[in-house]
Image (cartoon, rainbow, N blue to C red):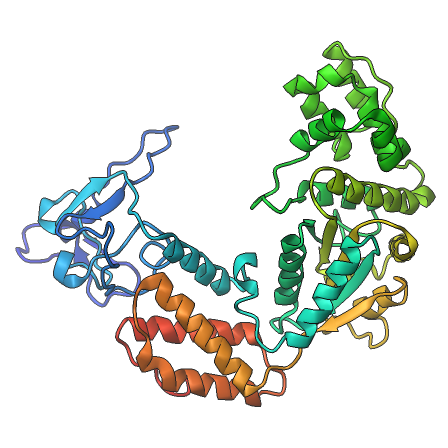
Length: 482
């Protein structure tokens, strides 16, 4: 293409939506050297505005559309057009001092409440709610809140409880599961969460289920799972052999006592034991690994070889791990088995797997008569489009787990919806330091729409509300009815 002087050919760029291609020379910000083959390019440093510092002061106004950098990543703030003249999606040349920018490897210091609020908003955009925010963002759940607290207290008192949370997509099932976990952790219980898929993680394969559960085990003081390494050492050192054998049984207790006490100071031994106890390796490989480390032990088989023995072995190990949690500082163990409908749909046409999963569910119901600090929660959605009205995942579990408590999120009133909107607006304004008063009319219209819907979807309401707040914070006026 010829631009300007017809005797000079200039390269142009067309991004696929432009009516007129742009000369390549006007896009200096694309002048990035190509990386050398086999060499990973370095991560870009953070930007710091030279004309105005945000350290210790209020957040600068934002003039660009929401992006992962300017909206939801703490420590990176997009300057306004007056500060850098690149607020409306124009990418600056960060190497040009005229842009008022300099390279800075230090993150900007935001108050903790701002970072926490931004994490909460980001989670809500993804359809999730954080444990630290779930109680604050719960509305219309007073009676259900009491039911969940009562179940947690019963479990802590060594009366095992089983709950089934059911509901369609976006109606609050995940919120309730998170609320239960938060209440249990507040009472000092350890927690684990397993997402079922019907293939690798399924009730038809109890030993694999136990492996996933132990891999996600978290204690009250842990934000992410830290593994069993330090906990195994703690039990072996703090408790006499009689207590370990009596409370952890002939499997876990015996295995812990088979290893000499001094071996627990060896990091390599602890790693082998962690893999062994989480069923990542069989006992033969664990014994061989310990032999290479000059430790000789006769470890018992934690899993069961016969299919018929696996449900009972899973029940025994589950109760022993709940006791293990108590011995290591927790008040009990809460386990969430989510996506039950996915697991059921994957196994419903395979008769052998259906029979094995039902045997496991039956023995889980028998735990109600045991004296162990255990709380089990199931999460399931209706099997839409499967074509079976009777054989639903929730009904299937309820017919096999004795004493199961079925829980469904209640319908929210208009007052509840408006209260939720106000709470979300407060979190949003804390996160981004902006007022969103102009969005009141649009929020009320969105709340009225949800209240009148015969099949309300709370998740869609939250996402729609955040979009309205985004537009209001940018000075745009949302169109009524959108």
